[in-house]
Image 1 (spheres, rainbow, N blue to C red):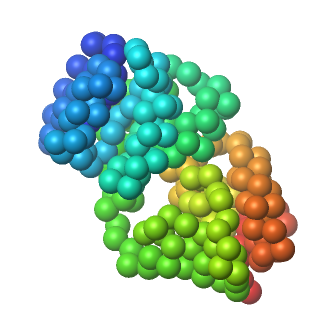
Image 2: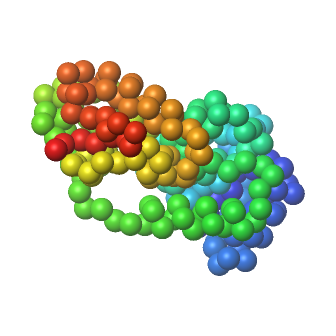
Length: 222
């Protein structure tokens, strides 16, 4: 089941028709009130979420979903007319899995939905990851250093998790961008560098385990 939250009726109908034609069950909503009510009845497998909405904007809805245990892992694609880098980073840092800008093609929309569902349907039984004195509990969504809580943003957590999953493997900026942010930001490798920098700072002395591989990317471990 895919939920669409979009106040523009024409776009809402276009998205619904495209997804239904591809075999998906779809419910659409024009505001957060109806959307939240539906979530209480049935959680979706994916949400297409517009930013500019009446009453409560998409970023607020996104943060609300990521802040609740039952909804924090729902795959979310932001759909918006806003196209600046800052708007993209805000959405992705708040926990969006992907981002598509209006106007968009139907084939692109379906492709992104299928790709995100493939990624999220790949089960991984590793719930607790560690390296040195860093411990990441994926199920409880916490990180500790020597047993002390380390507060990370959603994307910092996902970045650390991806590095820990691939201990000893050099990960390019492009690969990190695709896997952690959900798609490629062409020419936006500084976004990865910025998040690595803040992640290292929050990890303190333990941040030294994240090694920079010159002209390539990053890795944890030997």
